[in-house]
Length: 515
Length: 89
Image (tube, rainbow over all chains, first blue to last red; front, side, top):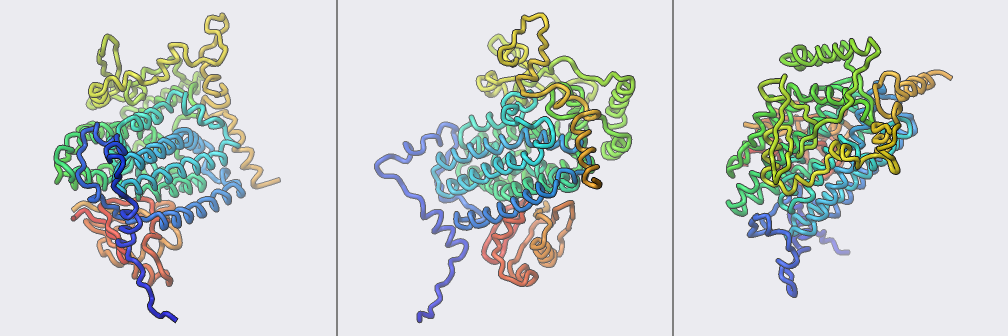
C-alpha cells in the first residue's frame, strides 16, 4: 500500500493552478482582435497578471458554497410558504416596502448579470474573467431567487402582479432601470467602476444590510432570507470592486483622472438611486432598527470614508457630491415620502401618513428638520384626510433628465426652495435636480438626451392603453395610463387605509387564531 | 485608524465564528442586530481557522465563511489558516 500521502494544495497554489493556468496567449488572432473593447475608454493596462483575487476562490469551491447557500435559502423559502409566513409580518403596511423592492431590484440584478457576463468575455486577464463569471452567475441567482420569492407575496397582495411589465413602464421604476441601463451602455472599465466599485462597495450595504435586517425585525423571514443570501455574495463583489480599482490605479498613473471622473459620476448616481431606500427605512418599516441617517453615517460616512482615505495614496479624492449628500441626509426620506404620498394615484403600492408615535420617532431621529419642516406638512395632510379630502397630486412631476427622479429635492441651504437646474443643448431645454446631475449631462449630453422619461412620454401620448382614443369625449387619461401600466385604480393604488390589502390581511390574520 | 468590519448572519455556525473573532481581536466591538451580527475592529481584523475549529468541534474550511457572510470592509487577505481584513497595508 502506498503510504505517501499527497500533500493537499495550499489555497494560493490551488488558485494559481485553477485560475491562471486556464489562460493563454492567442496565436492565430492577435490579443487585440480577440479583446477589442479594452482600449477606447483610455484605460491603460500593462500586466493583467498583477490582478489579485484576495479570496482566491476557485470554481470548484464556488459551486460547493453556492449550492449550500441555495439549499439554505430554499429550505427557508419553503418553510415560509408552508407556514403562511406573510401573516407573521408586523402589519400589512410593511408589504408595500416589498412591492417597491421586488418591482425594482430583480431587474437590477438581471442587468448586473448581463454586465458581468459581458466583462467575463471582454476583459483579457484570466483573474478578472473568472471573478466576473462568478459574479455574473451570482447576479442571475439573485434575480431568480427574488422573482421566486415574489410569488410568496403577490399571490396574496396587490400591486406586484406584473412586475416586469411595470418595470419597463411605471414612472418611478425608470429610476433604477435607467441607472443600470446607463451602466450597461458604458465601456467595460466604466461599468466595473460604476457597479463593482461605486455601487457594490460604497452603496449596496445600505440596500441589503439595515433594510434586510429590518425585514427580519418585522417578521419577514422570506425577504430576510433572499436578502441575506444575495448579500453573502455581495461581500465577494465588494472585494472584487476594491481590487479592480487598486489594480487599475496601479497599472498606470494616466488612469487616475479617468477613474476619478467615473467615481464622481457613479457615487452620485448611486446616492440618488438610494433616495427610495431612505424612505423605505424611515417610513415603510413598522418596526425600525435605525434611521436612514444613522445607517448612512455607519455605512457611508464611516465605512465609505475609510475607503477613500485608503485610496488617497493613489491620488483619489472624495467626490465633490459628498458635501451636498451630507446636507441632504436630514431631508431625503421625508421629501421622498411626501412625493410618493401625494403621487398615491399613480403608484403600484399604498401610502399613508405616519402615526403620532411614528412622527415622534422621526423627530427624535431628525431633531433639526422633522418638527420644523415635515411634521407640519403631514399634520396638514391629516387635517385634509379628516375632512374627507385626502390630498393627491393631479399633475405629473417634472423629472430630472439624468436620475429621472421628480424635482423633489431642495436647495442644500434652503429647504423651502426646490433645487432646479436647466441647460439648453442644441436648441432643447433639459432639466436637472442638482448641479451633479447637470454636470453628468454636460459631460455626455448625447447619451442623456436619449433618456426615456415616463412623465414626458405620457404627455406625448405614448403611454395610453392599447386602442385608446385620446380625442374621445369621455377619455380619462389617468385611467388609460394605469391600464397601460397594468394597474387597477382603487385596488393597486391610493391610500393604505381602506385598501383590499388592509382588509384581507386583517381577515386572514383573524383566521389564523380561530375557526 | 479607520475601522474594518465584518457582518455575519446570526446562526449556529456564526455564533462560534463570532466567539473566535472576539477572542482573537481584543479590540472587537460586537453589535447585534436583528438576524445579524456586525463586528468592528480598529485597523485590522483576523479570523483564525484554529480558533473556529476549537469552538465548532470539527474541521472548518475558512471559505465556509462565505455562507454566513453579509458584508465586510477593508482589504482582504486569505490563506488556509487566516482571513485578514485591514486598512493598513
